[in-house]
Length: 176
Image (tube, rainbow, N blue to C red):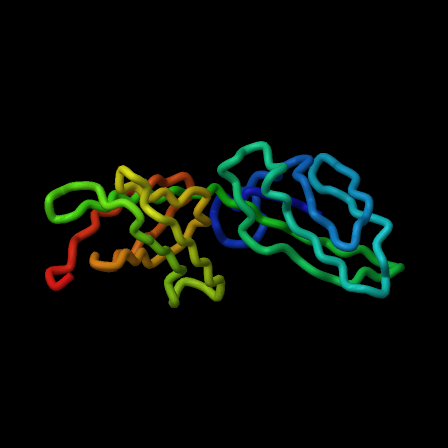
């Protein structure tokens, strides 16, 4: 198993990417994980049932790295080995400021971000409620295209880049 930071966001390990040594793994059913320099080795696997493996986000040394996929599943065979690459990416952040027509903060408004339909098969949906000061924070957002929806405001399309902090400008709808 190799956990790597997918720097070029292509989903494949290449020379541009960086291996994350000793990254925590979640293995179901349980198995023994041994750390190596460029990869981790998982043994004591069942050869008659499906094994699931994923990166444990809580054990990554950099809190802004997030798994780029849900993980992998496979059935191991006694005479061979399975090579699995598990990419992680630098997350982004979206900070939304919700104000009314008098420029006063709006508390308790629901803001929702969903993956753009054309972006990928991954249907991320993030929902947050605005605080007393009208701010909504979406942290640890996987890079990609998102649609930001706030009732009474125009929808905004956002392209979250690795490490970016976006502060979109919301425009009120005239008839709301």
